Image 1 (cartoon, rainbow, N blue to C red):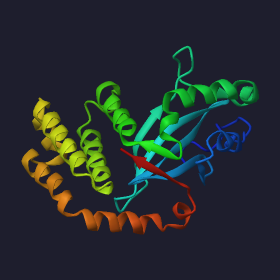
Image 2: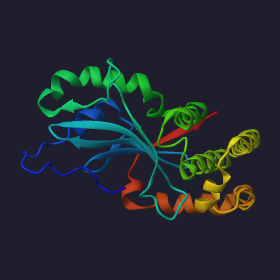
Image 3: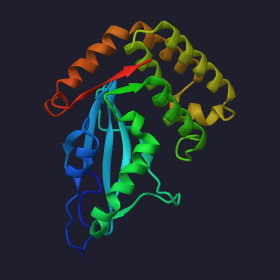
Length: 231
Protein backbone atom coordinates (compact mmCIF):
# COMPACT_ATOMS: atom_id res chain seq x y z
CA UNK A 1 0.00 0.00 0.00
CA UNK A 2 2.31 2.66 -1.23
CA UNK A 3 1.57 6.36 -0.72
CA UNK A 4 0.91 7.06 -4.39
CA UNK A 5 -0.51 10.43 -5.20
CA UNK A 6 0.42 12.06 -1.93
CA UNK A 7 2.88 14.62 -3.24
CA UNK A 8 1.71 18.11 -4.25
CA UNK A 9 1.64 18.97 -7.95
CA UNK A 10 4.84 20.73 -8.96
CA UNK A 11 4.49 24.49 -8.51
CA UNK A 12 1.41 24.25 -6.26
CA UNK A 13 1.38 24.62 -2.48
CA UNK A 14 1.06 21.51 -0.34
CA UNK A 15 -2.38 20.90 1.11
CA UNK A 16 -3.17 18.75 4.11
CA UNK A 17 -5.50 15.84 3.47
CA UNK A 18 -8.45 16.11 5.89
CA UNK A 19 -8.08 12.62 7.33
CA UNK A 20 -9.37 13.70 10.76
CA UNK A 21 -12.77 14.69 9.40
CA UNK A 22 -13.15 11.43 7.51
CA UNK A 23 -12.08 9.41 10.57
CA UNK A 24 -14.79 11.12 12.63
CA UNK A 25 -17.38 10.35 9.97
CA UNK A 26 -16.26 6.71 9.71
CA UNK A 27 -15.07 5.80 13.22
CA UNK A 28 -14.12 2.22 12.29
CA UNK A 29 -11.34 3.54 10.06
CA UNK A 30 -7.87 4.36 11.36
CA UNK A 31 -4.89 6.06 9.82
CA UNK A 32 -2.69 3.57 7.99
CA UNK A 33 -0.52 6.00 6.03
CA UNK A 34 -0.43 9.67 5.10
CA UNK A 35 -3.24 9.19 2.56
CA UNK A 36 -5.01 6.02 3.71
CA UNK A 37 -7.64 5.12 6.33
CA UNK A 38 -8.32 1.40 6.77
CA UNK A 39 -9.94 -1.26 8.92
CA UNK A 40 -9.59 -5.03 9.00
CA UNK A 41 -12.41 -6.95 7.37
CA UNK A 42 -12.29 -10.73 7.17
CA UNK A 43 -9.45 -11.78 4.88
CA UNK A 44 -8.34 -8.25 4.07
CA UNK A 45 -8.35 -4.54 4.69
CA UNK A 46 -10.83 -1.97 3.42
CA UNK A 47 -11.18 1.78 3.65
CA UNK A 48 -10.25 5.02 1.90
CA UNK A 49 -7.28 6.16 -0.11
CA UNK A 50 -7.18 9.87 -0.88
CA UNK A 51 -5.65 11.02 -4.16
CA UNK A 52 -4.46 14.55 -4.81
CA UNK A 53 -5.92 15.90 -8.05
CA UNK A 54 -4.37 19.33 -8.58
CA UNK A 55 -6.16 21.61 -6.09
CA UNK A 56 -8.57 18.90 -5.00
CA UNK A 57 -8.57 15.53 -3.34
CA UNK A 58 -10.47 12.40 -4.35
CA UNK A 59 -11.62 9.72 -1.89
CA UNK A 60 -11.45 6.17 -3.25
CA UNK A 61 -12.75 2.96 -1.73
CA UNK A 62 -9.86 0.49 -1.59
CA UNK A 63 -9.49 -3.10 -0.46
CA UNK A 64 -6.40 -5.26 0.06
CA UNK A 65 -5.90 -8.93 0.86
CA UNK A 66 -4.14 -10.35 3.91
CA UNK A 67 -3.72 -13.83 2.43
CA UNK A 68 -0.90 -13.09 -0.02
CA UNK A 69 2.73 -12.57 0.84
CA UNK A 70 2.40 -9.08 -0.65
CA UNK A 71 -0.38 -6.88 0.68
CA UNK A 72 0.58 -3.81 -1.33
CA UNK A 73 -1.63 -4.47 -4.35
CA UNK A 74 -5.23 -3.36 -4.19
CA UNK A 75 -7.94 -5.87 -5.04
CA UNK A 76 -10.72 -3.30 -4.85
CA UNK A 77 -10.50 0.28 -6.04
CA UNK A 78 -13.72 2.16 -6.57
CA UNK A 79 -14.51 5.82 -7.17
CA UNK A 80 -17.31 7.73 -5.51
CA UNK A 81 -19.67 10.05 -7.36
CA UNK A 82 -21.50 13.24 -6.44
CA UNK A 83 -25.18 13.95 -7.00
CA UNK A 84 -24.42 15.09 -10.56
CA UNK A 85 -22.93 11.63 -11.23
CA UNK A 86 -19.45 13.12 -11.58
CA UNK A 87 -16.35 11.77 -9.88
CA UNK A 88 -16.28 13.05 -6.31
CA UNK A 89 -13.39 15.51 -6.27
CA UNK A 90 -13.30 17.99 -3.40
CA UNK A 91 -11.33 21.25 -3.72
CA UNK A 92 -9.18 21.78 -0.64
CA UNK A 93 -10.50 25.35 -0.30
CA UNK A 94 -14.12 24.10 -0.28
CA UNK A 95 -13.64 21.10 1.97
CA UNK A 96 -15.58 22.50 4.92
CA UNK A 97 -18.60 23.56 2.88
CA UNK A 98 -18.65 20.39 0.74
CA UNK A 99 -17.75 17.79 3.34
CA UNK A 100 -21.25 17.02 4.62
CA UNK A 101 -22.60 16.39 1.11
CA UNK A 102 -19.49 14.41 0.16
CA UNK A 103 -19.79 12.26 3.28
CA UNK A 104 -23.48 11.62 2.52
CA UNK A 105 -22.60 10.59 -1.03
CA UNK A 106 -19.93 8.19 0.21
CA UNK A 107 -22.19 6.69 2.87
CA UNK A 108 -25.06 6.19 0.45
CA UNK A 109 -22.81 4.42 -2.06
CA UNK A 110 -20.57 2.19 0.06
CA UNK A 111 -21.11 3.08 3.70
CA UNK A 112 -22.46 -0.44 4.25
CA UNK A 113 -18.89 -1.73 3.79
CA UNK A 114 -17.35 0.51 6.43
CA UNK A 115 -19.25 -0.19 9.64
CA UNK A 116 -18.78 -2.42 12.68
CA UNK A 117 -20.42 -5.29 10.80
CA UNK A 118 -20.47 -5.93 7.06
CA UNK A 119 -22.78 -8.34 5.28
CA UNK A 120 -20.78 -10.62 2.99
CA UNK A 121 -23.54 -10.21 0.38
CA UNK A 122 -22.85 -6.46 0.20
CA UNK A 123 -19.14 -7.14 -0.30
CA UNK A 124 -19.79 -9.73 -3.01
CA UNK A 125 -22.36 -7.45 -4.68
CA UNK A 126 -19.68 -4.77 -5.08
CA UNK A 127 -17.37 -7.28 -6.77
CA UNK A 128 -20.21 -8.46 -9.01
CA UNK A 129 -20.97 -4.87 -9.99
CA UNK A 130 -17.33 -4.21 -10.87
CA UNK A 131 -17.16 -7.43 -12.90
CA UNK A 132 -20.06 -6.20 -15.03
CA UNK A 133 -19.51 -2.46 -15.28
CA UNK A 134 -15.91 -1.53 -14.49
CA UNK A 135 -14.01 -1.34 -17.77
CA UNK A 136 -10.75 -1.98 -15.93
CA UNK A 137 -12.12 -5.25 -14.60
CA UNK A 138 -14.58 -6.96 -16.93
CA UNK A 139 -11.99 -7.64 -19.66
CA UNK A 140 -9.13 -8.17 -17.22
CA UNK A 141 -8.72 -11.85 -16.40
CA UNK A 142 -6.19 -11.09 -13.68
CA UNK A 143 -8.78 -8.97 -11.84
CA UNK A 144 -11.63 -11.41 -12.50
CA UNK A 145 -9.69 -14.37 -11.12
CA UNK A 146 -8.46 -12.32 -8.15
CA UNK A 147 -12.09 -11.50 -7.30
CA UNK A 148 -12.95 -15.22 -7.44
CA UNK A 149 -10.02 -16.06 -5.19
CA UNK A 150 -10.97 -13.30 -2.75
CA UNK A 151 -14.56 -14.60 -2.58
CA UNK A 152 -13.49 -18.22 -2.05
CA UNK A 153 -11.02 -17.35 0.70
CA UNK A 154 -13.69 -15.18 2.36
CA UNK A 155 -16.06 -18.17 2.30
CA UNK A 156 -13.31 -20.36 3.78
CA UNK A 157 -12.61 -17.74 6.45
CA UNK A 158 -16.29 -17.80 7.42
CA UNK A 159 -16.10 -21.61 7.38
CA UNK A 160 -19.40 -21.74 5.53
CA UNK A 161 -19.75 -24.76 3.24
CA UNK A 162 -22.82 -23.38 1.46
CA UNK A 163 -20.97 -20.16 0.62
CA UNK A 164 -17.94 -22.11 -0.58
CA UNK A 165 -20.18 -24.14 -2.88
CA UNK A 166 -21.87 -20.97 -4.13
CA UNK A 167 -18.51 -19.36 -4.98
CA UNK A 168 -17.34 -22.50 -6.79
CA UNK A 169 -20.52 -22.57 -8.84
CA UNK A 170 -20.03 -18.90 -9.64
CA UNK A 171 -16.48 -19.64 -10.77
CA UNK A 172 -17.65 -22.41 -13.13
CA UNK A 173 -20.38 -20.18 -14.54
CA UNK A 174 -18.00 -17.29 -15.12
CA UNK A 175 -15.18 -19.28 -16.67
CA UNK A 176 -17.61 -21.10 -18.96
CA UNK A 177 -18.78 -17.72 -20.27
CA UNK A 178 -15.29 -16.44 -21.12
CA UNK A 179 -14.84 -16.33 -24.88
CA UNK A 180 -11.16 -15.37 -25.14
CA UNK A 181 -9.45 -18.31 -23.51
CA UNK A 182 -6.27 -17.71 -25.53
CA UNK A 183 -5.92 -14.33 -23.87
CA UNK A 184 -6.60 -15.86 -20.47
CA UNK A 185 -3.93 -18.50 -20.99
CA UNK A 186 -1.46 -15.90 -22.23
CA UNK A 187 -1.46 -14.32 -18.77
CA UNK A 188 -2.55 -17.09 -16.42
CA UNK A 189 -1.70 -20.41 -18.08
CA UNK A 190 -4.05 -23.22 -19.00
CA UNK A 191 -7.55 -22.72 -17.66
CA UNK A 192 -7.94 -26.32 -16.35
CA UNK A 193 -4.69 -25.91 -14.40
CA UNK A 194 -5.90 -22.62 -12.94
CA UNK A 195 -9.19 -24.27 -11.92
CA UNK A 196 -7.32 -27.08 -10.18
CA UNK A 197 -5.31 -24.54 -8.18
CA UNK A 198 -8.51 -22.69 -7.34
CA UNK A 199 -10.11 -25.81 -5.88
CA UNK A 200 -6.90 -26.67 -4.05
CA UNK A 201 -7.40 -23.52 -1.96
CA UNK A 202 -10.18 -25.37 -0.13
CA UNK A 203 -7.72 -27.95 1.14
CA UNK A 204 -5.23 -25.20 2.01
CA UNK A 205 -7.61 -23.41 4.37
CA UNK A 206 -5.50 -23.78 7.52
CA UNK A 207 -2.37 -22.57 5.76
CA UNK A 208 -4.22 -19.56 4.34
CA UNK A 209 -5.72 -18.66 7.72
CA UNK A 210 -2.25 -18.81 9.26
CA UNK A 211 -0.90 -16.46 6.60
CA UNK A 212 -3.71 -14.02 7.35
CA UNK A 213 -2.88 -14.23 11.06
CA UNK A 214 0.80 -13.55 10.43
CA UNK A 215 0.12 -10.61 8.10
CA UNK A 216 -2.32 -9.20 10.65
CA UNK A 217 0.54 -9.00 13.16
CA UNK A 218 2.28 -6.32 11.09
CA UNK A 219 2.59 -3.35 13.44
CA UNK A 220 0.60 -0.99 11.19
CA UNK A 221 -2.15 -3.56 10.63
CA UNK A 222 -2.36 -4.80 14.24
CA UNK A 223 -3.49 -1.36 15.44
CA UNK A 224 -6.42 -1.20 12.99
CA UNK A 225 -9.96 -1.78 14.18
CA UNK A 226 -11.66 -4.95 13.02
CA UNK A 227 -15.10 -5.11 11.47
CA UNK A 228 -16.97 -8.41 11.38
CA UNK A 229 -18.36 -10.16 8.33
CA UNK A 230 -21.85 -11.58 8.72
CA UNK A 231 -23.85 -13.81 6.41
